[in-house]
Image (cartoon, rainbow, N blue to C red; front, side, top):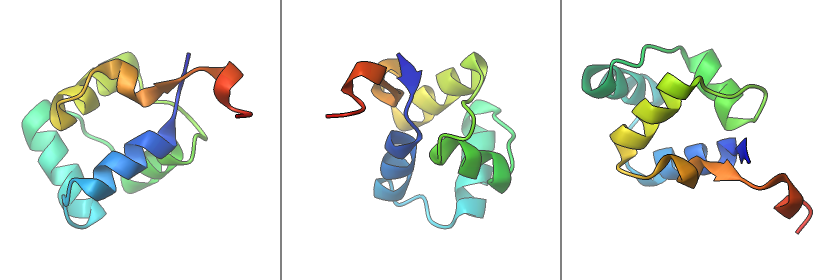
Length: 78
């Protein structure tokens, strides 16, 4: 299983959290995750993955299971 940044981007955009800066403030206030726009972009474009602590925070913030953000590499070609 690997982190799928497209799922993060989709849920963030669908959640109407406003601009990226507002999202970063909201997630920091609610979960303690402090990250930059650049890091968020890297997560959403699969250039790097969040730490386990950040993944837990993202799951808590969006009210989804951590597995929501994961994908099976075998399914990538489908």
